[in-house]
Image 1: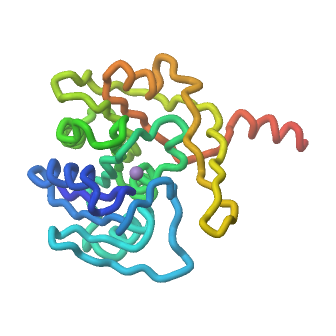
Image 2 (image 1 turned 90 degrees about the vertical axis):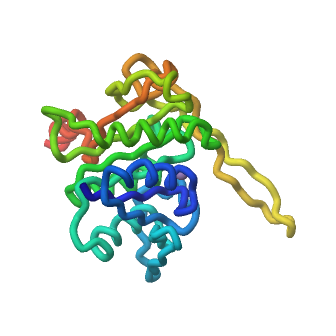
Image 3 (image 1 turned 180 degrees about the vertical axis):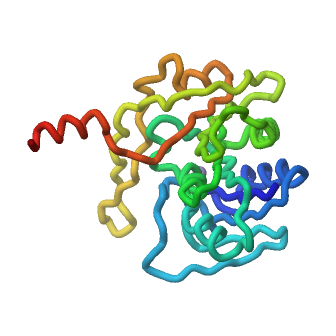
Length: 245
Ligand code: MN
């Protein structure tokens, strides 16, 4: 099995190294990741400048671009044959609810999915890398697992509680929860007295009920959400057709 691995925390991130170490014994891996932390870059592609591919001493490729750039270039410019699977992560911090829209971790997997490949994004719920070995073991188990009667082409979003392996509860299928709107922007002044802004934290949990990623991980389960990319609001499509008639 050939696996392409990427992330959004950059090629030096402990989560990427742990994921590569976990998958190397079971697959032929290629790692292509951003040269720096690109968390929050969503599905952006760099179109206003050329990109360069570098290779680190451990064999990882790194690119001065976004997670989507990395997977795009890996699939179209680096790998001679397409991989069997694209994985992203392990991200430092959760990607649940609307996080998935902003996430570069999910975006890297999405890019693989858009190229017709099964893809999985992995994130740890809490930041700081506690219990990373446990998360890497879970990631390997999910990659190894054969899901009978599941489609060949999928985009899975996995969130792993930061617990010792023995305390983790089994993976459960979830839907995305919902967050409240984001916190306000943080205003400050630069050394020249000019006003500057920092994007504030994401909103708290609004829909964290049973069946959601928030709910499952709060109980200690590994959460797996199947994602789709079609944003069409089908109920409103019918209503709009009626309104325009
Ligand atoms: Mn990240």
